[in-house]
Length: 425
Image (tube, rainbow, N blue to C red; front, side):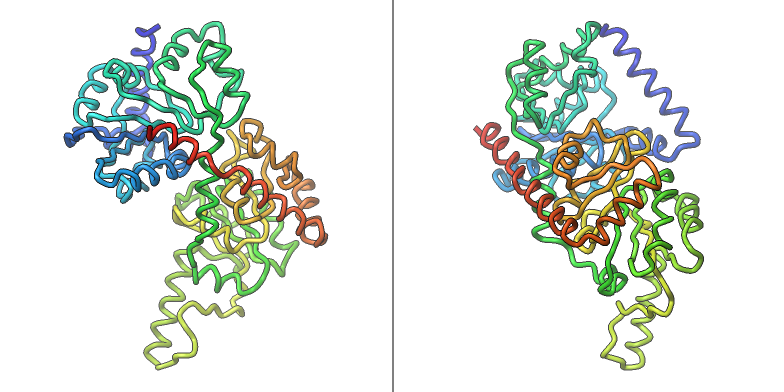
């Protein structure tokens, strides 16, 4: 099986190489791994994240480690460009790299260079050679916010090799009791139910939200519907709400923002009522400069002329979404008509009722929110309009939903403390 694994790694690299000829993300994946010069570290702390979502999930542990050990060198690696390109300059790390391809030689070279005292992987990604090398050198390797399901290969009759990888982990910090029981079923008793560190991250973000003057000006005291991490399937339904609720404002934050996809979204909205964030920012800054030149001190640059009838704002950048929810009243989380929903907790931490598509069953928090009647899954335009109408018109139901969702997030805070108590021994 190890031979097949090694062949699979090589084939995956070849596939990405071919894809890089026409796919920018694949191109970044290849270029980012060329001629990496690892800086030698003495007893560093290694954090690995698959992508941006896992970085935000593991960030509370990273921050806690930085605060407790300010003199230690912290090395962060990413598998995906969507994580590396956005967080390559994070002040929480001393060095940020793409994770090299998982070969025995790469694992030896990388671990020789960063010489980690411990290694922390968030949620998933199980790389045989890196794990094996860490195990051989007696480097504790922790999985945080891990989650397991019966359908995963680890728990199949043909998953012996994958179980070998899990046995190289020093300790698992899992999100729920079901994950712990699954690990015990294959003979792994080194697991603690700590919960999900995302709760700590989103709660901290909600307690100290960023001020976004442009968003505040766009909202202008009106009710605001935020559609986060949307895909075209989501947008085909959501854009029909705009004409149904002319007194509401709408913000769309697409999961992907290439020009053609942003244009397609603009074309779905009523003509003349939508604007990109970049355009609005330039418009208002120019207006502010004109006012300043005229000596008009009573009107700052973030004042929108609402005669422009701007009802929808499209976020054409990455990194704002978690702060946008502070201004929202209802949230829709995209991805549920595709591979799975995105982060519902960022909105939930601000007390927003969350709506999402039908593919949510791999996400514990979504199932729990539905059970609490604080989250709502829809599979059609009629269902979407029905739940939005209820939230908009039934004030008691809306208020109770907000209280339940806030209580749910607050009750689940604390995973970081549990994990750090164990690791920092």
